[in-house]
Picture 1 (spheres, helix red, strand yellow):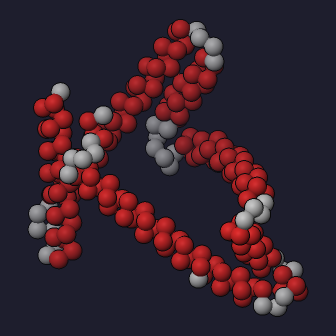
Picture 2 (spheres, rainbow, N blue to C red):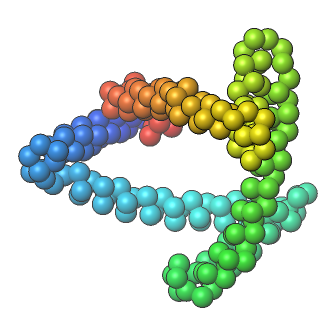
Picture 3 (cartoon, rainbow, N blue to C red):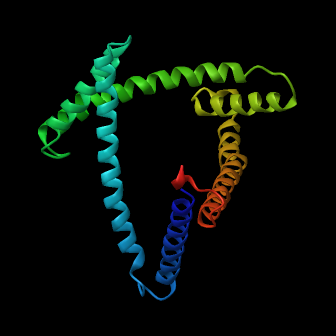
Length: 206
């Protein structure tokens, strides 16, 4: 087991280092190694087989649940019927009539339903967030009301400068916060990648 973990770590480090080196070389000298494209194609093939194994695993688990006749097996039956039906109807490809039927009359209504539920949850969370407890929540409520009133046509009648002030809030402090979050995400991604490349974190051995 220990030798397998060391081998997986070495393979991950060498593969990641070669891809990074090839990407850096493409920016300066063009595709001189040609390694990254080959490794990406291999990764695509491996991912395809992983998806196939996942499909088989889901089928096996839920078929065993149906055989055990435990409570709530109806959900396993619905899942299996949906998977097999989608697989059979989608054999013609994503542009076939059956696939378009699934997308237009099943997936889109489900997405619209979840979007409506998400809007309800957001409204509930906003109502809770508008409770003023301290100075920070006061400024949060103040700027939220300014933005909401600035979005309405009625806002210009309340204060002629309200739309301009709303645009300033969205373009200056809000954008600064978004850029700070993106920088934090980028630094976290780089740190996670380095930890995986150096073998400190080994999710591929779990």
